[in-house]
Length: 149
Image (cartoon, rainbow, N blue to C red; front, side, top):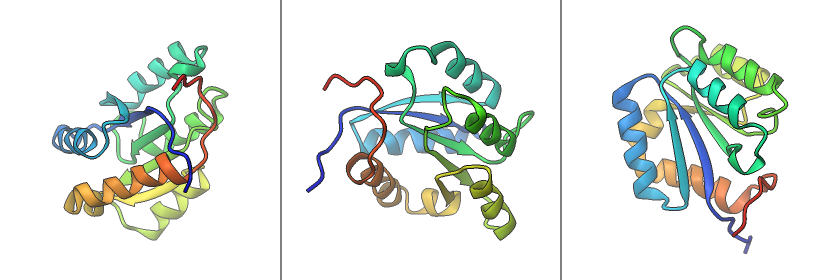
């Protein structure tokens, strides 16, 4: 059985307040081993990543990214994340209400690690989010970010 890692640092970028509240609740309920940082827009998330990028212990392990954000949309944000030396290796899980094949292909082309339909996450919240977190906590090997335990 794979060794389970310690605290999982997650950045959630979601502009829809209702979706953000539901996802926060689900993260708290499904995994006590997560530290969730929430941002309503790409600009504030980028500012945080840039200001904390020098400390490997503060770089997130996962980024959940809404694909339809105001101002800097999720597509541009994904491109910026993958172009940055700070976040280029961080897996990005795209959350989108779109199930169009064009959007799915575009997300993977831009460097997304996973594309998940919001309808799946929000309709089967605990089970689907638990599956995603189990994968990243137990099965996937993520780069060491300075964990001490």
